[in-house]
Image 1 (spheres, rainbow, N blue to C red):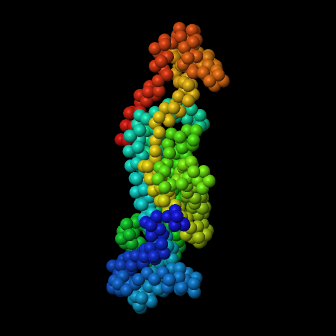
Image 2 (image 1 turned 135 degrees about the horizontal axis):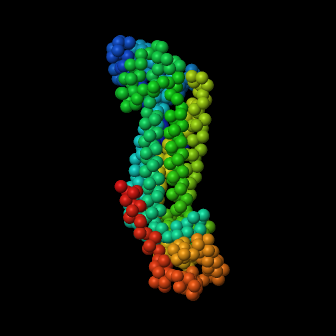
Length: 430
């Protein structure tokens, strides 16, 4: 992933240095286990631990000749550790190292992503409580529906990211497996106790049954969850973008003192961060399908998944980490315009209270169908003649015989829509 959309913590996880360091830790842990169970002489692991250093350039130079990354890595370690290093990788296959290491990198990334989600949850909770009763118009199909509060809108995002945290925790657990089972996963040349030792040492758990690789449904689960989280990022970003439109302008991204919005138009303040998040979400989601397609490999293994994972592993995690942190900053710094929200609520001159009028008519004994038709006819007049619905209803003597003026005034009051806000908040913010 390009530096523009990368943060140091995630870049370090997916660096060549970290990858080879994990490989070395796996080999050392396996050697410790083999020493413990007397499969190789004592002292091998300590020698390798003391003498071996990660030399990325040397490994790459060797790989250019031997065309095999794990062999190149082991050769580099042997050059430094000496003859005792011949006991490394006993009975193991390349995928034992590659798959276990890949899972560790995913786990490391996932744990940072969990922390990122916590940041978003924290800012959403704060903003939702602050604007718990800040009135705004609810929209369906982009059209004014009925009043809600900004706090409810933000609480909805909060609950979604709570689910995302739960999903991601499950996905991290799913990929926290270790396979040290040798060629085609039969443990023919390595004892299962070695796998158990390595798993415990690396805070993983043994893969119950591997082929020659760890089954890729685990990884498909992980990347699918990243795609879902990206969808949530885009949902919030899209809402901010819509609410910053000139015709709406209820919310605005923070605009710094020296910031410029357009090279041509000095007046412009564009929701560029939210637009950027929409684009980044597309990138993350695009990695979900290749992960799903990696599930079906030939027999006990092939390497068609390898090139895919070398790309989607770093890119999906690094991009989502960047997006989550950017979203947290956008949410924390957004500018709210409550007066504009009230102005927009009143934009349709009372049409948003049509349901309550209809319901009052049905309570008085008029059929729902007839009540709907009566109120809809007045709504059409409001649109056509730019009239106020309250005034039109008030002028209808037949309706006013059924609904008192006091009752009518109580209907045209958006605060009654907020009577269960506390109830909803208690369910969300337990």
